[in-house]
Image (cartoon, rainbow, N blue to C red; front, side, top):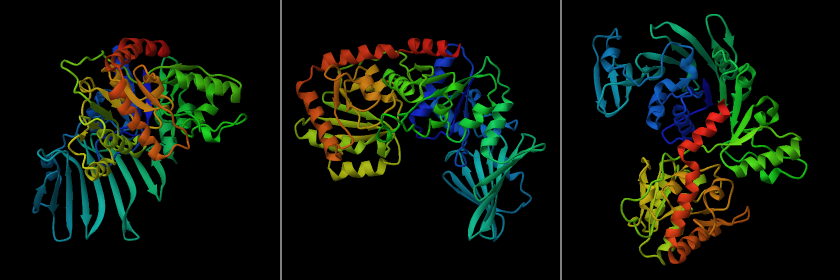
Length: 495
């Protein structure tokens, strides 16, 4: 069995979760059974809704908090009628608006319902308020999986206890919470931190030498995993830049704190995985220089292409696409400003922006302020499988991309690309002057210089580039990322 450890997941997940999804597909393809373990708490949503929407299978998911119960990962099927049957109050009034409902038990007590959607009666959670104070929350899938208990403190509801249940309603264990400190109480033992709970989970997996543990995020869980993984093979996936260039000199290196613990204990790690050859080579050189010993580091792309995709009709002329989380570090605002400038020289230019995130409102406002809504569009989160090949150019504003799944998918659609010459994704997928342009930048490059660099490259592409030649070269690069080739890399490392 291959166990993959991560922290959280959400509706607008990061590249780490999408990398895990690609890995799940690769492992299915080579008949390697795998589980993906998440250790964060998910009070606002059932974790299954996140994982299923992304493409994981329910049987592939383990959640730290239900691992010690007999509940399986499943969609919410607990109904309002089932809940009403548990009430001792026979008289009540109720109303519902969309996904939220409220039931009044008397003048002082009521329950608020949070439904899975606006039409069905499936309950994700119920909150209880008595005399104006929140006292309890129940969470459901196909039964009640856990309950939170609250008490008033400083005029606020203070969470002091979570109780996790088995399917027959018996208590599996409790989490006692005291101002950030936690304790987990089982019938036969007590754990005094979440790290200890994670370690207990790993121990309960009864890992053997034939098992493989892959850690995608080590923060808060890395030590507990390494101390309890027994004879299993252990690998660390490096998803981001692994060191701080500004704090590194000839004699000392500052590792990224996400990887520092595992790097310092590299002798206990069977393999490290980077997604690009460039990062692998840099890590090897740095370990040799600063540590004196080079660990086993392999390159496996975090994603793959099931096939190269060709347009069924002519690509839309002068069309640009970008796809990412709408987050500040993706610098989609720079892309918008660059395209506003380029529009003056390329009148037919259009830009479609795919993705979701907390920057959406600000980006929408920026488009409106520049009166650009007729040619710049926020397309939302969509399945991009058959989208890229309809465009002529992919534009990236990111200044830090460990790999760039959207970049890989874009070249799989034959898209020429423009991006900044920063580690590691852009130089992996963009060969300057052959399938796009790499824009030189450094730590002193101003925001306006970044915008101007994008603008200049866009104009250069549409005015002077041999677009057909650029498209062919993108397809040539993409062939290295076809699924069958990536599967073989995974097969080799887990043997």
